[in-house]
Amino acid sequence: MPKILKSSLLFTILLAGILFCLVAYINGTDERLAANLPHSNIFSANSIDEFTVETGLSVGEIIDDLVIAGIHVDKPGLITLLEFTGTAKNIRSGTYKPNPNLSTGAVFYHLSKGPISRYSLEFVPGYRNEEILAILENFSKFSLEDWSHAVDSVLTMESENVLVRDAIKQHNSSTEFVQSDPSRALQGYLSPGVYLIEDETTLLDILTAMLRTFLNSITDDLVVEAAQQGLTIHQAIVLASIVEREAFIPKEMPVIASVFLNRLERGMPLQSDATAQYAVASDLASVKMHGWWKTRLQQDELMTLSPYNTFNIAGLPPGPIANPSLEALLAVIYPARSNYLFFLTSPACDGTHSFANTYTEHLQNADLFNNSACADNIE
Image 1 (cartoon, one colour):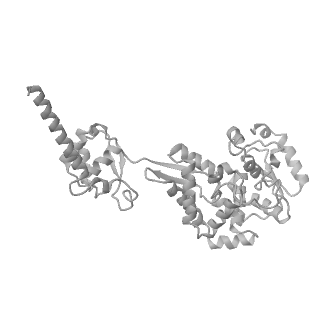
Image 2 (cartoon, rainbow, N blue to C red):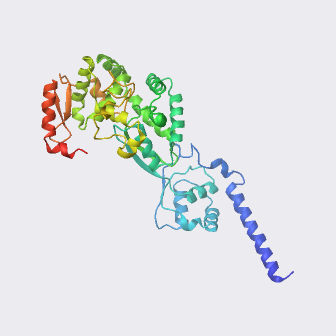
Image 3 (spheres, rainbow, N blue to C red):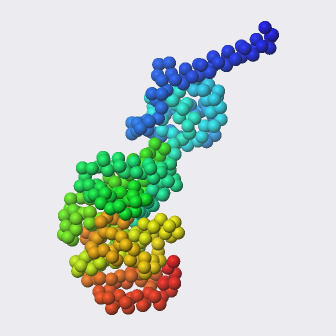
């Protein structure tokens, strides 16, 4: 056999042997890597504190820090894996959260995968579920189909809760907005706030956290106090969602709530622009052009046929139009005492409103507003 061929064959055998050893090492002779790959409990509360890989460290220094942090690995073996696979030059700085019981092979997997991704998403009060989904689609890998599956799971998990049963009844009672139906389920029941999203966070985790945060804020006292206003807690949430969309300044919420409650008591339609905006958004062409909340509604749009449009229905819509803050809900349950029946944007253009007891006063306020610079600035 030619000398060159012999050398080539020996090299091939040697390389195959090294690869076999590496595979065996990663798998583990007494502990298989497959049993230690990240899953739902790898990053659990039982894990050690987060481990940070600082910039500029050598592979040896990184491994020394791992050992100091309580992660016991075979240093020579891990260095061999990192060097042979080319991972040593590509270990990214950042925060890792490995389990202390991982094998050396699994630690290699974590280092090659990269640091955990962590960011905060804020869902402000007054968002529709469609807006929440859009944020999650932009910043995460979640889709409408994922949302639908997660909502179904949440509803099943929380089906014994009376508030959730009301949400299910609302979701099943109307065929409107068919194209966005999965997003509309649990409308009004997802608590606004800032939520921490990590690599392992699922959409079910997020929706469950938002729902349970909201449910935990509904105390027995609030249910009793809502009844004092002649409202079930579900109805209070519906009205709170309208107040949330109408108010720009939180301190005005109790006054705006009093207007709607006064109108309900007198059998007057609420005539909330926010509910007309919600109805108009059933036309996805309008959503594409103006967003979910069209600001300048035409007169005919105010009368858009919908069980949610309080310009052409009596009383409250069947469900919330958005996710209200706790402040808006408290404003409905503990409203200001007033005789107001009307309000509109103040000519001061500072987010406040002008309130009126009578329609004549309301028309006078409207004239003041229409003749102000603020009227020209509304898009």
